[in-house]
Length: 153
Image (cartoon, rainbow, N blue to C red; front, side, top):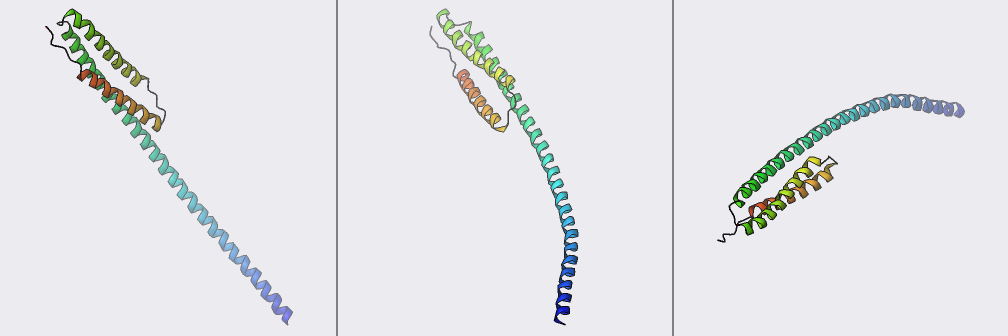
């Protein structure tokens, strides 16, 4: 009798384990499908965010380029105004002023070329370029602002 009860108990445990494991597989499949769907949703959101970030980056580059070109054009106008004023200066002072203006004009054209030649190389490279360019542009603006004529007669 003990043998029969023992066999019946072992059989019941095996049957219970088998039935329990069948339900677990179905549940595992459902859970896996839910995870796959969630991962696909996250991937779609990430792609959308990446597209938005790229577009924002492009817009930032275009805005920066337009503002820089406007500043370069304003510097060109200032330099042209100074050139017109130099004509009225004494000959000995004129050469000195022309030399200073030539340096400012060269720096302005170098900045314009640097802006045109910039190729996108990632966020770090963009930040480094933008900071360096802004500093150079500020230095040029200060040079033009500080350009003055001596009132020697």
